[in-house]
View 1 (cartoon, rainbow, N blue to C red):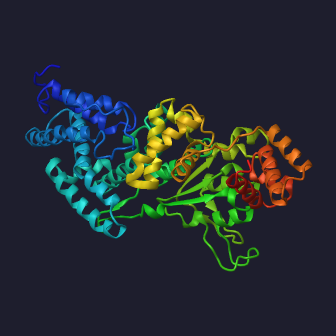
View 2 (cartoon, rainbow, N blue to C red):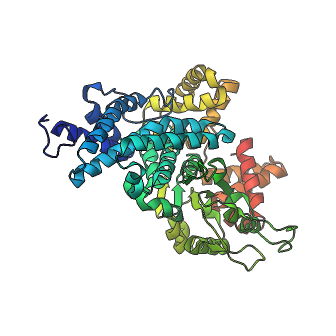
View 3 (cartoon, rainbow, N blue to C red):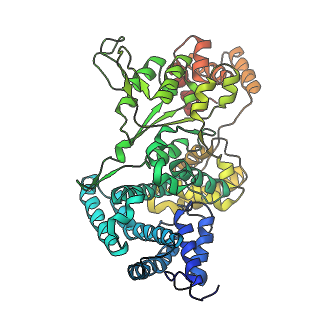
Length: 520
């Protein structure tokens, strides 16, 4: 790269101009895609530290992983921006393209100036956050005065300093949550983290900062994938990473990240209770409604989210009401004719194939099209492992650390030895991460793991019939196993309940009891 001086004069050479462009590309890329590494290599050259192609939480902390390169990039970025800022004061007339490039560099510099302080705020006690937020704002304001020749006016086209700080806070929270909730270094795990990041910010971070932060909550996120693959963790990462405005007058953020996420498991509730929990009710609107109650939708703050787990189990009447909420943001509580407004974001999840349910007439196509604009698929554990025992070991260590802390390494060795001896390292893990978690627990307690046999439907019917003929079953075992068969054939708790003539909660209770007791 040539070191000759550019004609514009702001950048000292063509090489510095190219370096600035690489830094800006790094600033606005998806941090969970390998392209981040490519830009870091361009910026750092021989100083680049090889640390793998992805950030992942396994045995390392965020501070000791690829963060080494982040520190090195800062050492390049900060002096460059300060020198360019001084030069810009002497040369106020420069080409628009160079001024825009400087503006992006200065914005990234400002983020890196307060990034560690924002992380400390995220990890601090809620009672101290207002004070810390005010300190961060004052630090950012001082740096803006140092960097932009016209001070805070230089951020006007970005929405002002308060909006910029709110975006910085969201970026840091999003990285914190995605990094903490989703582990693994396989392509499937890398893709999942990148997909979550796009669900939060879209693929165009500049556009998000300009306009999308206002309307991203209107787009429902649908999380699909097999049972036990962490759909709730994905939902939490998206829901807890929403944009929260900063108020410059009070020096605080206008929302609480802890209270911004609400979960409703639709498969565990009867239709009446689902309607009440979602939409709320007026006193006397049904038996047991002894007082007025706001539902999840009314209670959700503007920058919050409601997670609807097992949305494929919703009965048609509630599907209609949910569709209206997603279309108009308007709903009514049970027994009330006054309109209320849902201000937050809806996140839904299912392990069911909604296209099959639509073909069977059990799920509304128009509701599906309201849910599917932003879809994240959680890969199975087998996909996340990618055939590499080292990836399986990372998951085991992560789960062991949650259970035993500093004893994780010893337990990890025991679990891996057990898996290799009794299951084989190519075991399919039909129960996904949830099954692996139970494996870790069983090895901790018994130093062995015996997976539940997965019989075919025909085998299960034959065994049940044989046990009935031999009078070998208690009434409870007979009920539990028969309900399991009907549930398996029906495909949902609601459909099974209709066939059996019982409440959906009864079906779910018996199915769960059978799993826990090892009846199937």
